[in-house]
Length: 264
Image (cartoon, rainbow, N blue to C red; front, side, top):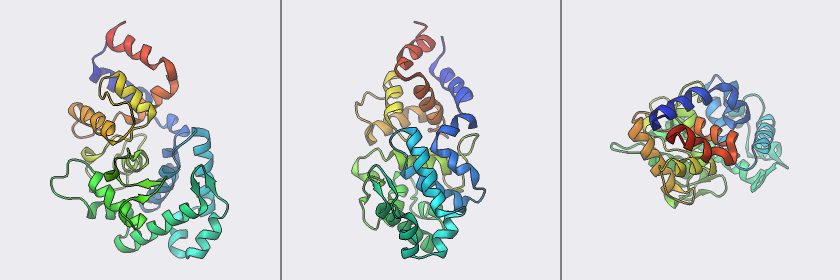
């Protein structure tokens, strides 16, 4: 029987490996050594990260192939008409060619003003911030051109959504280990919020980290606070590993956790 900290570290050691990232959108970031290119790839990959994993991977690959091998360079060197033409016909669930073009046009504006998406996030950090949500909200406002962000792609944290995809982008770009490549220097990983989804909500409820029934921001903050109590400097450390554990076990995750944590 393991204690919760022991279990989490064992899970991290087992699942926080690059081979598990091959079926995860973080995989697309690995091909970009330049963090300025990587953050734009991460924006596209995270904003398309909903639905079935195989379709997410296929549609993200399609979008990035349309943008060429250097998406940032393509974005900065071209104009709106060229971008719209390149993306014409793209669709992933509620994301259309027009909404993806709008996202990238907004990102181009942020880059022109700040130099990078990461610099924009840093500019919105305030002394005493307990999480990165305020700074991420600033990024959303600047990309979307309005406080509520871009529906179905980049919603604002202040509106109560879990903002899973936004928190996922932040985790990829702020943390640095075998899975998360990093690239946003000067942002403290301690401020990250768990990008909660159905898998993490299920695990969080089974571990009594939250009793929320919906994967909203309240649940994300409760799970993050529980992890922060165990790992103050890196509260999203266990996110990737636990998510992939849940994905691999599916409906058996409850029985598994009962066995390893309670010996039952």
